[in-house]
Every structure is written in structure tokens, then in C-alpha cells.
Length: 173
Image 1 (cartoon, rainbow, N blue to C red):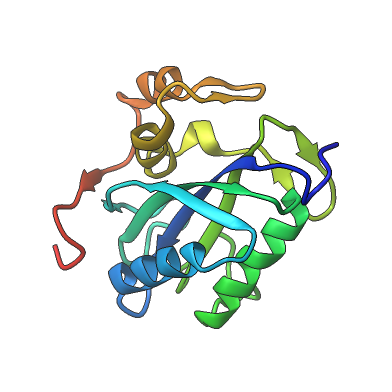
Image 2 (image 1 turned 180 degrees about the vertical axis):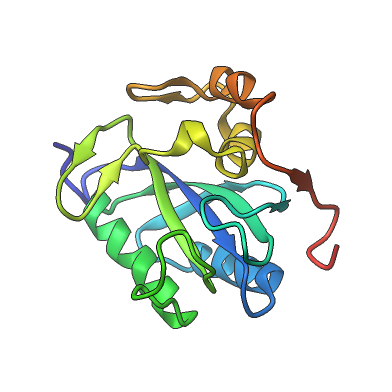
């Protein structure tokens, strides 16, 4: 297990919102990622508008991904991400895959596989979600997702069977 604070660990974050001006929620969350202590955001994807997964009777989502380096452990980073969600009014008592003001998912952390009561890394549904894979591919096309494969290969496997998604030119689109 990596010890926090001793070196920089790469991490990839999925970002999504479909309530309360979702484009603004996502761009504000990105700004908050830049402000996290012991973290350096190295790149951010374009924004995407996607059809909801799971519960389909809800507004479209705005999604993005961010790549960062961090001195935090995976669990510390998860806590920091949940704190950001909380400042955006995230309600965790609602329906699974339901509408939300902000969703920040720790997708991949330093090539590790972590499975405990609090955290599953890599995120277990990465390969099922074009709204995660397409932004992630912009940042790290050749990233090896432990136990799943290369991001580019995962994207190639998704093309014919995925829900509607479009890359946005601006957040107001």
C-alpha cells in the first residue's frame, strides 16, 4: 500500500451533474479540485452532455474528467471529493443513479486495486460508461485500468452499444 505524503500518486476523477445548472456545478467542482491541498491537477477533459444511465427519467448529465497528482492516500482523496460534493448539496439518501447536484468518482488511483467498505478502485463501472471513458480517454488514452485494460481499448469496445453522448463546445451548450 502506498504511504501518503511521501510521493506524488496519479489519480483520475470522474465529474458529473444534472441538477442546479449542471455545467456550472461541474466547472466549479473543477476549480475546487485545483484548490485541494496536496494535489496538483494536471489536465481536465472537455465537457460532455450524456443521457442518464440507470434511471433514465431525469435530466441529461454534464460530465468531465480530471487527472491529478496527489500526496493523499486514496481514502483521504475520497473524503476530500465527498467534502466537495457536500458543499454542492449532494444528497446521498436519494435513489441510486438518480439526479444529483454533483458526483465526483475516484476512477483510478496509482494503478492500485482497492476494495473495501468505503472505496472500490478502479471504479467498478468504468467500462460500462461512455460518459466516463470518453473524457478519461482525452486525458490518458493509454492508461491501464487495473483488471480492465487500456482506456483506448475500453472506448473501442463501447462504441456500438452506448447511450447518447455529445462533446460540448461550451458549458452553455
